[in-house]
Length: 291
Image (cartoon, rainbow, N blue to C red; front, side, top):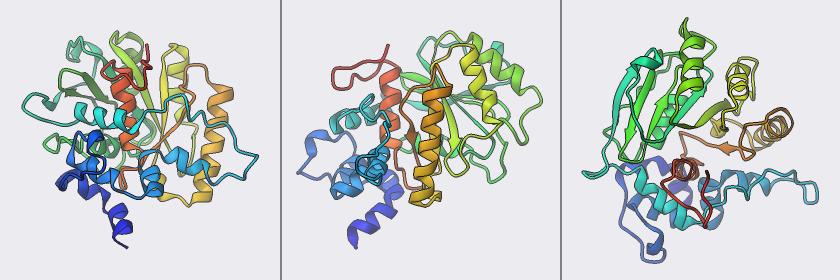
């Protein structure tokens, strides 16, 4: 019962932390992650490697290729990545500025990643979860979809900049296409675009706006499946298979491996942090570094 409660209350760990354990101390860069490592094996997999946990439910002999081994960091790699996202006097994580046009954006030389998705996909909630180790960073989360109207820039220490892009679809800014297209096409330090897809409803027609932009400009991008806590296991498996087939057959620039996440249970958040640290050149995992 205690382990089960720990799973459902995992968000609390990132705010409060706990005493460091001794059994796996070598991996730890934060008290919160030490608590995660204390979880039973199946719960740890569900929290840190949700795609691997989903794969277990396929019928033996008929498992599709989910490309799980392309990015397959160790727990030690993931623990080291936590330090990139942990705020301290030496590692300031903060909101920088907002812009409605690229020429109003801060002129930064550090690597940059951007998050884009349909209105109500849970983009701001996901970014807030990624920054949970820096609780002073203010990321506005609204119950009303489409509240992000500008490009919001966040500095992550000396490591990289994260950009929260306006949502497309419902209540999108009138100049959305001009604003976002110019940024994607001309931002020279943009390392990767994270395209968020609602795992409950899958890829929608409006998602093709962002997909077509990334493909047209030959941009490397990644599909992040949000709200995985909202679906039954069977429905989530179905959506993962459909989206994986789309990525494999309909895209050229999309990273083959999907990243399912939940901003509520924090499932997949650690792995996504590690991936971001890696692609921005701030972490080498298992001797492998993205170019």
